[in-house]
Length: 352
Image (cartoon, rainbow, N blue to C red; front, side, top):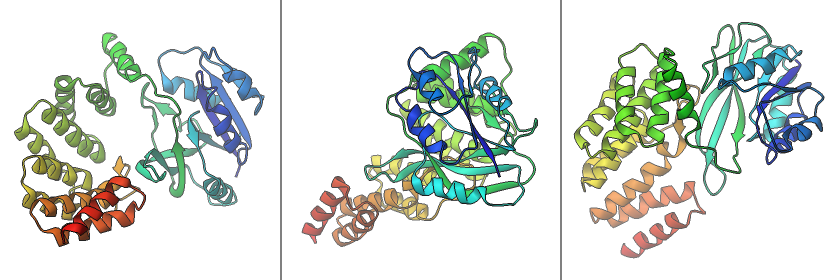
């Protein structure tokens, strides 16, 4: 199997050589599309490939990515971002996968975008990463672009890491959505979900609530609906409407079994109200394993570390010191180098 790695870039001189050094170890072709860089991005790209193209930016990520796809010649296409990184063991997995003669249309990989102090992934989700080089596999939506999957799908145990070295403009995506609003572009349910997310991230809670609640009335991806309930709850809580904050979390149960992210959020609200027995109930329900292939945004620590840590705190507040030590010990096993966890474990131990 031969793969074209396709990228769109803009002023990425700080990270581009890092990801291209990874990609050249498995790519049969590298395509880099520059959308108007004013630094050394294009020169760096040319050190790795002669397929470097310019593309006039038109406020549409899908158009830029599809242009990159159009310049690729290999049977399969793989997209990457300039601030992505691939570890050696995952490069080896990609090389092994390339030897696979199995026919497929879309291959999903893990995308890890946040990490703890020990570099363990704390936030991850699945992304369509390699697709057949065919017209039906193209990006849609101008922001938070996606490829609609079809045909034979594979879920691979391969992880791409998103490792930023500098903060991005927090208003960029919201401003792009607002430009579309001004042009009276009709948002799909998926676009409305991501628009609501951008409003939430930037503290526009009233607007976000309106978008989330409107979105939840539509036929849409269940995992996004559950996430919308969680984010909308946080909006209400930030606006001091605790009743609606709880209500939004409980409403997520309509869509599927409770997610640990939801259960930990319920427990957080209860702890803030000193309702520690109730909080323990929800935290114990949260302990388990996430379904990494669900397509959901997964906060990994909500399935073990956060419940253990917070159950320990609840037990401490209830003066159950041996239980507090026990649960903090479970949390410490998961993050043995975390200073706060070790400090709390030693303190709870001193009370027994």
